[in-house]
Length: 244
Image (cartoon, rainbow, N blue to C red; front, side):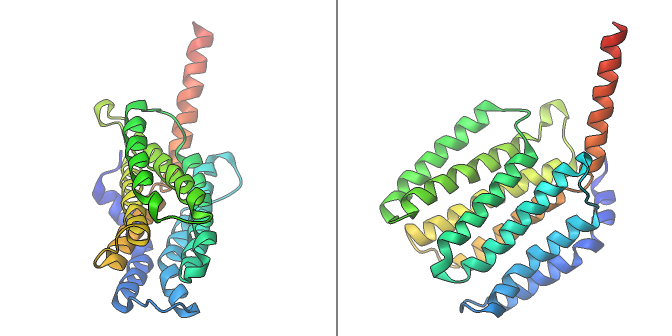
Protein backbone atom coordinates (compact mmCIF):
# COMPACT_ATOMS: atom_id res chain seq x y z
CA UNK A 1 0.00 0.00 0.00
CA UNK A 2 1.38 3.43 -0.98
CA UNK A 3 2.23 5.90 1.77
CA UNK A 4 0.56 9.33 1.93
CA UNK A 5 3.85 10.94 0.85
CA UNK A 6 4.07 8.74 -2.25
CA UNK A 7 0.46 9.47 -3.15
CA UNK A 8 0.97 13.21 -2.68
CA UNK A 9 4.08 13.26 -4.89
CA UNK A 10 2.28 11.28 -7.57
CA UNK A 11 -1.01 13.17 -7.80
CA UNK A 12 -0.12 16.57 -6.31
CA UNK A 13 1.11 18.33 -9.48
CA UNK A 14 -1.92 17.13 -11.46
CA UNK A 15 -4.25 18.67 -8.87
CA UNK A 16 -2.77 22.19 -9.07
CA UNK A 17 -5.40 23.38 -11.62
CA UNK A 18 -8.16 22.10 -9.34
CA UNK A 19 -6.92 23.99 -6.27
CA UNK A 20 -6.30 27.13 -8.30
CA UNK A 21 -9.79 27.08 -9.81
CA UNK A 22 -11.35 26.43 -6.38
CA UNK A 23 -9.43 29.41 -4.99
CA UNK A 24 -10.68 31.64 -7.81
CA UNK A 25 -14.26 30.50 -7.21
CA UNK A 26 -14.15 31.33 -3.49
CA UNK A 27 -12.41 34.65 -4.08
CA UNK A 28 -15.13 35.75 -6.51
CA UNK A 29 -18.14 33.95 -4.94
CA UNK A 30 -20.28 35.08 -7.86
CA UNK A 31 -24.00 34.63 -7.25
CA UNK A 32 -25.63 36.29 -10.27
CA UNK A 33 -26.84 33.70 -12.82
CA UNK A 34 -24.65 34.04 -15.92
CA UNK A 35 -22.46 31.99 -18.23
CA UNK A 36 -19.37 33.45 -16.53
CA UNK A 37 -20.63 32.33 -13.10
CA UNK A 38 -21.31 28.85 -14.52
CA UNK A 39 -17.78 28.71 -15.95
CA UNK A 40 -16.13 29.61 -12.64
CA UNK A 41 -18.33 27.11 -10.80
CA UNK A 42 -17.59 24.28 -13.25
CA UNK A 43 -13.83 24.86 -13.63
CA UNK A 44 -12.85 22.80 -10.54
CA UNK A 45 -14.89 19.82 -11.78
CA UNK A 46 -13.47 20.18 -15.29
CA UNK A 47 -10.01 20.09 -13.66
CA UNK A 48 -10.93 16.82 -11.94
CA UNK A 49 -12.22 15.39 -15.24
CA UNK A 50 -8.82 16.17 -16.80
CA UNK A 51 -7.12 14.70 -13.71
CA UNK A 52 -8.93 11.36 -14.17
CA UNK A 53 -8.13 11.37 -17.90
CA UNK A 54 -4.44 11.96 -17.17
CA UNK A 55 -4.36 8.79 -15.08
CA UNK A 56 -5.42 6.77 -18.12
CA UNK A 57 -8.74 5.78 -19.60
CA UNK A 58 -9.90 3.31 -22.26
CA UNK A 59 -12.83 1.06 -23.11
CA UNK A 60 -11.11 -2.02 -21.66
CA UNK A 61 -12.52 -3.74 -18.57
CA UNK A 62 -9.61 -2.70 -16.37
CA UNK A 63 -10.69 0.94 -16.68
CA UNK A 64 -14.36 0.32 -15.81
CA UNK A 65 -14.04 2.02 -12.41
CA UNK A 66 -12.31 5.10 -13.87
CA UNK A 67 -14.86 5.39 -16.69
CA UNK A 68 -17.75 5.39 -14.24
CA UNK A 69 -16.09 7.99 -12.02
CA UNK A 70 -15.33 10.09 -15.11
CA UNK A 71 -18.94 9.85 -16.31
CA UNK A 72 -20.18 10.83 -12.85
CA UNK A 73 -17.94 13.91 -12.90
CA UNK A 74 -19.25 14.90 -16.35
CA UNK A 75 -22.87 14.65 -15.17
CA UNK A 76 -21.91 16.64 -12.06
CA UNK A 77 -20.34 19.36 -14.20
CA UNK A 78 -23.52 19.68 -16.27
CA UNK A 79 -25.55 19.76 -13.04
CA UNK A 80 -23.33 22.52 -11.64
CA UNK A 81 -23.92 24.65 -14.72
CA UNK A 82 -27.69 24.15 -14.61
CA UNK A 83 -27.97 24.96 -10.89
CA UNK A 84 -26.58 28.43 -11.52
CA UNK A 85 -30.07 29.31 -12.80
CA UNK A 86 -32.83 28.71 -10.18
CA UNK A 87 -35.30 27.78 -12.93
CA UNK A 88 -33.06 24.84 -13.88
CA UNK A 89 -32.98 23.31 -10.40
CA UNK A 90 -34.91 20.17 -11.39
CA UNK A 91 -32.81 19.38 -14.51
CA UNK A 92 -29.69 20.05 -12.45
CA UNK A 93 -30.85 17.63 -9.74
CA UNK A 94 -31.50 15.02 -12.45
CA UNK A 95 -27.91 15.38 -13.67
CA UNK A 96 -26.62 14.86 -10.14
CA UNK A 97 -28.92 11.85 -9.75
CA UNK A 98 -27.24 10.32 -12.81
CA UNK A 99 -23.85 11.16 -11.29
CA UNK A 100 -24.79 9.35 -8.07
CA UNK A 101 -25.87 6.29 -10.08
CA UNK A 102 -22.49 6.22 -11.83
CA UNK A 103 -20.64 6.54 -8.51
CA UNK A 104 -22.75 3.75 -6.98
CA UNK A 105 -22.00 1.47 -9.94
CA UNK A 106 -18.28 2.26 -9.58
CA UNK A 107 -18.14 1.55 -5.84
CA UNK A 108 -20.19 -1.65 -6.12
CA UNK A 109 -21.98 -3.59 -3.39
CA UNK A 110 -19.14 -5.68 -1.97
CA UNK A 111 -18.70 -5.65 0.99
CA UNK A 112 -22.38 -5.01 1.74
CA UNK A 113 -22.21 -3.66 5.34
CA UNK A 114 -25.94 -3.87 6.12
CA UNK A 115 -25.60 -2.22 9.54
CA UNK A 116 -24.09 0.94 8.05
CA UNK A 117 -26.75 0.96 5.33
CA UNK A 118 -29.53 0.68 7.91
CA UNK A 119 -28.15 3.61 9.91
CA UNK A 120 -27.71 5.82 6.84
CA UNK A 121 -31.16 5.06 5.44
CA UNK A 122 -32.71 5.81 8.84
CA UNK A 123 -31.02 9.24 8.79
CA UNK A 124 -32.09 9.62 5.14
CA UNK A 125 -35.74 8.98 6.11
CA UNK A 126 -35.51 11.57 8.87
CA UNK A 127 -34.07 14.18 6.48
CA UNK A 128 -36.79 13.50 3.88
CA UNK A 129 -39.49 13.75 6.56
CA UNK A 130 -38.06 17.09 7.72
CA UNK A 131 -37.83 18.56 4.21
CA UNK A 132 -41.20 17.35 2.86
CA UNK A 133 -43.27 20.36 4.11
CA UNK A 134 -41.05 22.69 2.07
CA UNK A 135 -41.35 20.72 -1.18
CA UNK A 136 -43.87 21.23 -3.96
CA UNK A 137 -44.56 20.04 -7.49
CA UNK A 138 -42.16 17.53 -9.00
CA UNK A 139 -39.74 18.10 -6.11
CA UNK A 140 -42.09 16.15 -3.80
CA UNK A 141 -40.94 13.08 -5.71
CA UNK A 142 -37.56 14.26 -7.02
CA UNK A 143 -35.93 15.29 -3.75
CA UNK A 144 -36.72 12.02 -1.88
CA UNK A 145 -35.52 9.95 -4.85
CA UNK A 146 -32.31 11.95 -5.09
CA UNK A 147 -31.78 11.74 -1.33
CA UNK A 148 -32.02 7.93 -1.47
CA UNK A 149 -29.50 7.83 -4.34
CA UNK A 150 -27.15 10.16 -2.46
CA UNK A 151 -27.42 8.03 0.68
CA UNK A 152 -26.77 4.86 -1.31
CA UNK A 153 -23.66 6.41 -2.85
CA UNK A 154 -22.34 7.42 0.57
CA UNK A 155 -23.11 3.93 1.95
CA UNK A 156 -21.18 2.25 -0.86
CA UNK A 157 -18.26 4.70 -0.63
CA UNK A 158 -17.89 4.26 3.14
CA UNK A 159 -18.31 0.48 2.96
CA UNK A 160 -15.23 0.18 0.76
CA UNK A 161 -13.02 0.95 3.76
CA UNK A 162 -12.52 -1.95 6.18
CA UNK A 163 -10.02 -0.88 8.83
CA UNK A 164 -10.59 -3.88 11.05
CA UNK A 165 -9.55 -6.27 8.28
CA UNK A 166 -6.85 -3.94 6.93
CA UNK A 167 -8.58 -4.20 3.54
CA UNK A 168 -8.22 -0.55 2.62
CA UNK A 169 -6.11 1.75 0.49
CA UNK A 170 -5.61 5.51 0.39
CA UNK A 171 -7.80 5.72 -2.71
CA UNK A 172 -10.63 3.85 -0.97
CA UNK A 173 -10.25 6.18 2.01
CA UNK A 174 -10.54 9.14 -0.37
CA UNK A 175 -13.81 7.82 -1.82
CA UNK A 176 -15.08 7.30 1.73
CA UNK A 177 -14.30 10.89 2.71
CA UNK A 178 -15.73 12.08 -0.61
CA UNK A 179 -18.99 10.22 -0.02
CA UNK A 180 -19.36 11.70 3.46
CA UNK A 181 -18.62 15.23 2.21
CA UNK A 182 -21.17 14.84 -0.60
CA UNK A 183 -23.77 13.75 1.93
CA UNK A 184 -23.00 16.77 4.13
CA UNK A 185 -22.96 19.22 1.19
CA UNK A 186 -26.31 18.19 -0.29
CA UNK A 187 -27.94 17.93 3.14
CA UNK A 188 -26.90 21.53 3.81
CA UNK A 189 -28.23 22.53 0.39
CA UNK A 190 -31.55 20.78 1.04
CA UNK A 191 -32.06 22.44 4.39
CA UNK A 192 -31.03 25.83 3.00
CA UNK A 193 -33.52 25.72 0.11
CA UNK A 194 -36.42 23.78 1.59
CA UNK A 195 -36.29 24.30 5.36
CA UNK A 196 -34.33 27.19 6.89
CA UNK A 197 -31.83 29.48 5.13
CA UNK A 198 -28.32 28.87 6.48
CA UNK A 199 -25.67 31.54 7.14
CA UNK A 200 -22.65 31.36 4.80
CA UNK A 201 -24.53 28.69 2.85
CA UNK A 202 -22.63 29.13 -0.42
CA UNK A 203 -19.25 28.71 1.25
CA UNK A 204 -20.19 25.70 3.39
CA UNK A 205 -22.11 23.92 0.60
CA UNK A 206 -19.50 24.44 -2.11
CA UNK A 207 -16.50 23.77 0.14
CA UNK A 208 -17.84 20.36 1.16
CA UNK A 209 -18.99 19.72 -2.43
CA UNK A 210 -15.57 20.34 -3.99
CA UNK A 211 -13.95 18.24 -1.24
CA UNK A 212 -16.42 15.46 -2.08
CA UNK A 213 -15.67 15.49 -5.79
CA UNK A 214 -11.93 15.63 -5.09
CA UNK A 215 -12.12 12.55 -2.88
CA UNK A 216 -14.19 10.65 -5.45
CA UNK A 217 -11.85 11.64 -8.29
CA UNK A 218 -8.83 10.49 -6.26
CA UNK A 219 -10.45 7.07 -5.87
CA UNK A 220 -9.80 6.53 -9.59
CA UNK A 221 -6.04 6.71 -9.00
CA UNK A 222 -4.60 3.21 -9.15
CA UNK A 223 -8.00 1.67 -9.95
CA UNK A 224 -6.37 -0.22 -12.84
CA UNK A 225 -3.80 -1.66 -10.46
CA UNK A 226 -6.51 -2.70 -8.02
CA UNK A 227 -8.45 -4.43 -10.77
CA UNK A 228 -5.35 -6.24 -11.94
CA UNK A 229 -4.59 -7.34 -8.37
CA UNK A 230 -8.13 -8.65 -7.94
CA UNK A 231 -7.90 -10.53 -11.22
CA UNK A 232 -4.57 -12.04 -10.16
CA UNK A 233 -6.05 -13.13 -6.83
CA UNK A 234 -9.02 -14.69 -8.59
CA UNK A 235 -6.69 -16.54 -10.97
CA UNK A 236 -4.70 -17.90 -8.02
CA UNK A 237 -7.88 -19.05 -6.33
CA UNK A 238 -8.98 -20.79 -9.51
CA UNK A 239 -5.62 -22.57 -9.78
CA UNK A 240 -5.83 -23.64 -6.13
CA UNK A 241 -9.31 -25.06 -6.70
CA UNK A 242 -8.12 -26.99 -9.76
CA UNK A 243 -5.15 -28.43 -7.84
CA UNK A 244 -7.42 -29.31 -4.94
